Amino acid sequence: MRDTWPLLESIPFPAIRRGRLETLQVNVGYRCNQSCVHCHVNAGPNRTEEMDAETVDLVLSFLERRRIGTLDITGGAPELNRHFRRLVTAARDMSVRVMDRCNLTVLEVPSQEDLAEFLAAQQVEIVASMPCYLLENVDRQRGTGVFEASIRALKRLNALGYGSDDSGLVLNLVYNPQGPSLPPSQVGLEADYKRVLGENYGVVFNNLFTLANMPIQRFGAILIAKGEFDRYLAVLRAAHRDENLAQVMCRNLISIDYRGYVYDCDFNQMLDLPLEYDGRARVHLADLLDEDIADNPVRVAGHCFGCTAGQGSSCGGALKEAAE
Ligand code: SF4
Ligand code: SF4
Image (cartoon, rainbow, N blue to C red; front, side, top):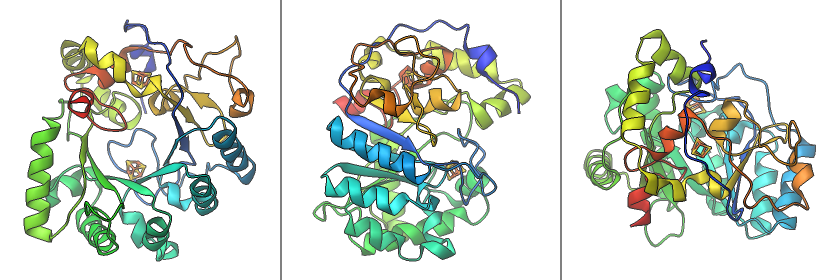
């Protein structure tokens, strides 16, 4: 796979400094039951890297010591990490808001028959990838049969109360474009998703998050192979809006890899750009138990235009509309 970093690192991007740390985003490993075309972590069934028990303990200590309000768990399919349920339960016992970046089809993995009930009992917020409401588009991007499995999973979650306004069980969906273009308006697309999924399948959900594809990892390599990398970067750069800089997720979040090393965001983690702090080559979460990194500069480069183009993208979807 062609690495996009040599192309991205020389592209200037406005300076960003950190604000108050509110969210710990933890990648618990790269194993996944799928291997999607656009996966920015190159996850798949054959990846073996996963967070161990000791690092999970450290994550829990950090949440408690630094009084972090939100734990955002990602992967791979994070639920396949053998410590996932302990991490979730212990964080919820501390009243930490827990988000699970769920691919939906993991609910049908043989060892995960009771996963939906576990997530509901712990009141975990589910953020589920659903790149389109049309079968052909989802299956092309994520694999044959993924759309129908996703609908089955959404119906199961709905049956537990997920996605209903009054249940307190939050189910948000994530959309990303099929190719090298910006996502459409989040508000308009959410209305379309609600209409089509509701009318055709009886599925409900709370919000749709629209995200631009990042020109890194598998998607970046495809862009290079097709000769589309420069054009996509030009699209992102032309659509950059300074007002999105105030809300990019690296201001209030740190991203932790499965070994416990710290990055400014998940994308920097995938580019192997560790957090720069206190002159250390790599910062481990254990190093930050008693440190406040507010005002620390963020490592930015060309890929950051993926966060600031158009309506903007963050782990909570569009920035502009999210702020309105
Ligand atoms: S489901 Fe998510 S983590 Fe798994 S391969 Fe697809 S994009 Fe990557
Ligand atoms: S890619 Fe990461 S570092 Fe760059 S703006 Fe987005 S969140 Fe911040």
